[in-house]
Length: 128
Image (cartoon, rainbow, N blue to C red; front, top):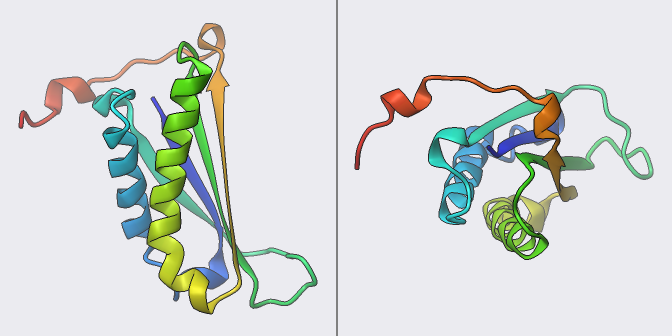
């Protein structure tokens, strides 16, 4: 883990390279040094129906949710949150300078007792 889910308003797709944002977030998660590379997942979902602030259809948002298994202390989670959020801010800065976009993020733990996992990604990672 982590699983990073980006929820965003559809009206920003012409302003933001969402695949590029996903890659920037993946790299930032890897750069924290606290998440296993094989566990990092980043995905983005477009919301076509939104109502924001005063109802102006020009407003947009990017909301980042980071889900991870427990076991990391608060200081570690805070540092990882800061690094990932900073990567998002940096990537989105050009669009945010000229467009109305709200950026938010939340990191939360998943109860491992209620979250079984299995997979073979580790078997297929390129060595580098």
